[in-house]
Structure formats: C-alpha cells, structure tokens
Length: 171
Image 1 (cartoon, rainbow, N blue to C red):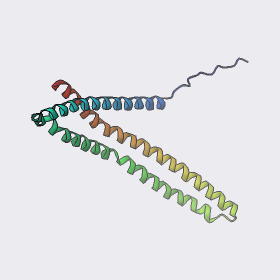
Image 2 (cartoon, one colour):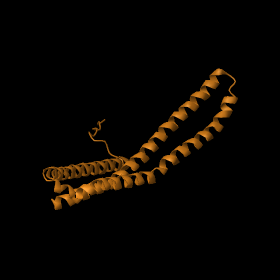
Image 3 (tube, one colour):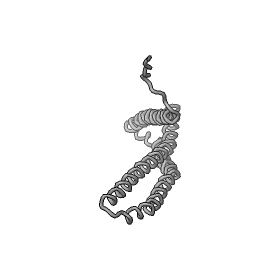
C-alpha cells in the first residue's frame, strides 16, 4: 500500500483565511498610524525647535491645533467603541439566561440523586458545562473587543495620516 505524503502546509479553512486577512489589516492600520505619528512628531518637533530660537514662532497655528485634534480623535474613538460595545452586553445576557436554563435542567438531576456518586456525577456534568459556557463567553467577548479596538483605531489612524500629510506639505 502506498503511503500518502503529508503536506507541510495544512489546508486553511475559510475562517482561518478571514482571520488572517483581519490580522494583516490590523497590522497595516498599526503600521500606518505609527509611521504617520512619527512623521507628525518629527515635523512638530522641528516647529517647536524653531519657536525656541525665535519666540515669534510660538504663534504658529499648529501649536493651537495639536491638542484639539487629539481630543477630537479620542472622542471619535470612544464613540466608535461605545457603538460596538453592545455585543458584550448581548454576550453576557445570553450567558446568564443560558445558565438559568441549565440550572432548571440540572436541578432535577441533583434532587433525584440517591447516592453521593450520582450527586457527584451531576455536579461534574454541570461544572463541565459551566466551564464550556465560560470559554464560549470569553471567545465572544474577545471577538467583540477586537471589533471595538478596530473601530477605535480608524479615527486615530485618519487623524494621524491627515496630520502627517498636512505637515509634510506645509513645512
């Protein structure tokens, strides 16, 4: 009988490809944001250095807009996160209703267990189910939290890129 060779690279399912694309997109956003932020810091540091040599440079409009731009981006990020946070509330609510249903199912098992062995068996089943439910809740919350972080990164990235472009043209 002929042996099949195992592939070094297992086949990727559609969920794996989607997750990989999402991670690559997140890395791209992080790269663009940090690069634009570094460029902005460089331009603004130069302006601050020039203003230190000539106090008339302190009236440059960039100095008055720096803080307000950051506050606007932070507010937009907070709003984007808040709009996505409903998924966490939904996950918690589903979890607790599920636990309520499971307790109604488990209560007769505990009540009818005539021996300590049966009681421990019912407790082990309930504990295993609870642990599984907790892990599923954690996965849901992690997924929603990742979406919240992605939503919050968009206005920050947009502001950083706009600042870098504007300062590159102005200076």
